Image (cartoon, rainbow, N blue to C red; front, side):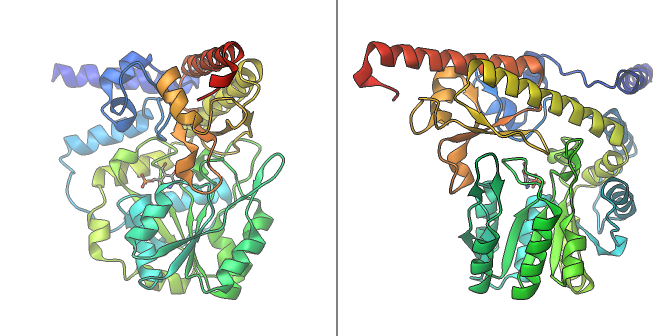
Length: 417
Ligand SMILES: Cc1ncc(COP(=O)(O)O)c(C=O)c1O
């Protein structure tokens, strides 16, 4: 009993502390490594700085912790058969945050965003059908399409001087060849691009014209940075007469991927009819703890906004650090989420800078190559860490580059391996 009161007191103190200070305290790396067992902390030896997988180093929002503790103490750990109270909570969040009016009866449940995508593809794409994607993009998109017994058609992003664009003409050509579905990443991982409304409107018109089913993965949308407007795809699809679903979750915004709960939302009535045919098991395999954590998350925007402030500060810090210590790296700043897509092609570390940085600087990024066409020579860095971690990562990479430059000056023929 005494322990319960101590825990409750500690929790209330943390809650008050977090709200009053409007900061998220990031524990030292050794502490996080001791406490957590996720892939970020177990894949590499302890001397490697883990800046790869999209998990945050921040502690959970106190409201989510309290909800989970409460649900477990109530032995509320059974099965689900639908989104229940999550639908109106998400509806409210989407309206307040983006002005998107979601019909709560169009909200369906899935184990996670990946499962939501696979199940939507299974319903909308005939076996052997083709699904367009726009690399470089979130690597599992390739596997998810395969899992749905379909095949990928790549229409790479167009690299501009200071950004990337969707290749709308290329997508139209793909759509015209009878593509069944398009997997949109909105905002786009790994670049952190928040697509312009006009781009999405043009896309919706193309989808309607060629009857291509669009799946919009909006998992990173809650993390849109201040000053940027995120546009949900569903209302545009509805206006254009295109069939579409949105798949989303609190899993990225509030760092609860392990809790396994996502939403699949139909843009239109016909698509809702389709989603009504989702196997019952899809909702049943969703975690009840994940559902309650999502309800708590979409209700606690204070924590989300504070997390975004930390990410934006780290984005500025990274830009400064690169300018000072690694000027050969090209960094186009993200407008959403905490992923930094770095062009390392001029760094002098050879064809696979990711591997060189992992082996010799002991910093784990994500290999750009795994994001598909256009990713070679790039790497993705996770900004949701403490500023000190970021400083240390840049210092280690800069030291490696300096060593390589010194070696190639001394032995020109054995330059960058
Ligand atoms: C664009 C995108 N979609 C889906 C996921 C995976 O989501 P989930 O863990 O809910 O399947 C991620 C994870 O980082 C992601 O970046």
